Amino acid sequence: MKRHLLSLASLDDAAFDRLLRRAHEFARGAAPIPLPGATVANLFFEPSTRTRASFELAARRLGATVLNLDIARSSTVKGESLADTVRTLHAMGVGVFVVRHAEEGSLAAVAEELADARIAFANAGDGGREHPTQGLIDALTLTRRFGDCRGLEVAIVGDLSHSRVARSASQALTRLGAEVRIAGPAALMPEEGAFPGTRVCQSLDEVLDGAQVVMMLRVQRERMDHTGAPDEKVYFKEWGLTESRLAKAATDAVVMHPGPFNRGVEIDSAVADGPRSLILAQVANSVPVRMAVLEWLVEGLAGG
Ligand code: CP
Image (cartoon, protein in one colour):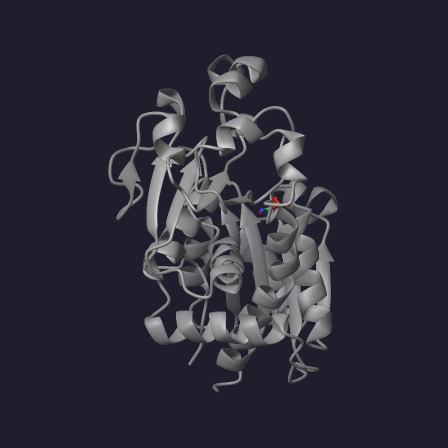
């Protein structure tokens, strides 16, 4: 049966568990079953370092052919639609499309439009809504660290209103039984109900209190008009994570950030580079997660 990864909610429990299990196996060094006939195209309409590079590395480790379309030099600039770009590359033999797009829901719409084609889509981030593979990375990182996420006290802090990574992380972690709480400046809090199953806190002190995991978020200036963007110094003073603030969390608390992060804005360098930081572990886990996702998508195309 053909598969897409458009959102975490679209994964049933069997698929969610399988992706995490395979990602664990790849992270522990399991040899992939090669997918030599598979062709994967990375279409990134927004900037990326981690997601694009790790999908490419994952595809190569699986023995797939990988194409990185340079969107700024593609026919997109002549007005070609996403659906027509996909049709064009599919005619050349591309089966799996990894797509990052600024417009929320754009990939889901194209997946529906091209429902009859033997194409699988992976959402690599759509607007402020979803970044499902990042949610899987955060779940893998914490499962590897703690063994079990049930009852784990997770604080997610910062610009929640624009954060697709926070939406996907909170979905993945609550699904694994973590207790997720959120806080940020009033102007950057999401609409009510946007983070189901989480507790809303009113201050940094409250959200950090006893947390075992502190996940900091970048202020997404690119999604704000400049009048709405907070002053960086004021933001750091009020919401930045420093070593002294981290002392309010549990004594063995770990720190996460999906990246890219802004030193001295949402996180101090001493914390980001410190012994409790899992930031580079998250990056390292991105390749096995994306190997598991590509393997699953290609298997779906083959009717497996
Ligand atoms: N976390 C994440 O999506 O990073 P990139 O924007 O670098 O891909």
